[in-house]
Amino acid sequence: MAETRHTKVLIIGSGPAGYTAGVYASRAMLEPILVQGIEPGGQLTTTTEVENWPGDSEVQGPDLMIRMQDHAKAMGCEIIGDIITDLDVSSRPFTAKGDSGTTYTADAVILATGARAKWLGLPSEEKFKGFGVSACATCDGFFYRGQEIVVIGGGNTAVEEALFLTNFASKVTLIHRRDELRSEKILEDRLLKNPKIEPLWFHTLQEVVGTENPLGVTGVRVKHVKTGEITEIPCKGVFIAIGHAPASELVKDSLETHMGGYVKVTPGTTETSVPGVFAAGDLTDHVYRQAVTSAGMGCMAALDTERFLAAQDDGETDTTPAS
Ligand code: FAD
Ligand code: NAP
Image (cartoon, rainbow, N blue to C red):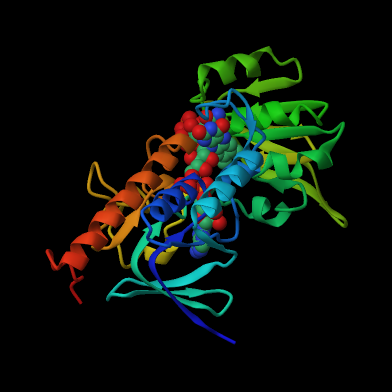
């Protein structure tokens, strides 16, 4: 039966920002409810080694996220496997609808819905998605043992995916539209030293080509950005790693956003354009986009929420959103 749950603080998202907010809000005795969404643990569950989480010189992304979940739970955060499909922030208490049928009402909301992989938008990319085209090497790399693979992109994700895929592939071609990577230097060094990886500079993906029956990839057509020359590269797998876009669909019409959909916050805080709604992590951050910065913002969001709710209790400030 559909039920309604009320909470002082509803945390939406279970990446580093959401779980850290869960730890801090629980310790502030706010008895938060955290809704995990479709990807419990967030983006780090799609990677392997994480080498820049302070205190762990190396930790597996999925393990780190289980530890964060356990930590939030141990502090008293209620963690629910549900997806928020609709969020109404026009009046308080705020109302969120869960895919499960549950309605959540909340005195304050912390948005920590993070970001999702971007796609190029090519019809052939769409056609072969799940049949040779992927945006997650850790999820799908295993299927390409002994095969040739291409990776598109030149950031940290592309370089890490290319390195990881050498565990399976016979050859990995990294296709980048410039001749300079934007990844960390340490990753670039590893990439350039890896005998299985061949960078292809100044090229963009034009088309994924393959067979119809069974549906499968046999290669890619790439274009030189300066000469326009088209080349075909044989491969069985195509990994798109061209960045991430903020998951702001729930609030795109109700909160101020900028820079292509990132939720706008007052600098130095996690306050959004609606009092009582706070945002943290990759959802708000088009610059740093790291686990540790997301966790830091999750902490800030819980502290901002605590102050907001205390002010409401004291009746000090009327921050009722304009209707
Ligand atoms: P995310 O981790 O994006 O989590 C978002 C959460 O929101 C998910 O749990 C999702 O289920 C939930 N959600 C979304 N929509 C809804 C909804 N409607 N209802 C309920 N819940 C919802 N950073 C590093 O510092 N070091 C690394 O080594 C590193 N490696 C990376 C490797 C890869 C392959 C990728 C993709 C990223 C990597 N990053 C790394 C970046 C890092 O993962 C992100 O900066 C970080 O995860 C962002 O945390 P977040 O909490 O803001 O959001
Ligand atoms: P990113 O840093 O935004 O890099 C995206 C890459 O894809 C860029 O090289 C970009 O090219 C290329 N690109 C974008 N659109 C393209 C298009 N239409 N066609 C061809 N190429 C295109 O994204 P990311 O690598 O996913 O990283 C996202 C964030 O997560 C970053 O902050 C990153 O530091 C973080 N992250 C960190 C780690 C780590 O710390 N180990 C690992 C993974 C991710 P240009 O360079 O020409 O713009």
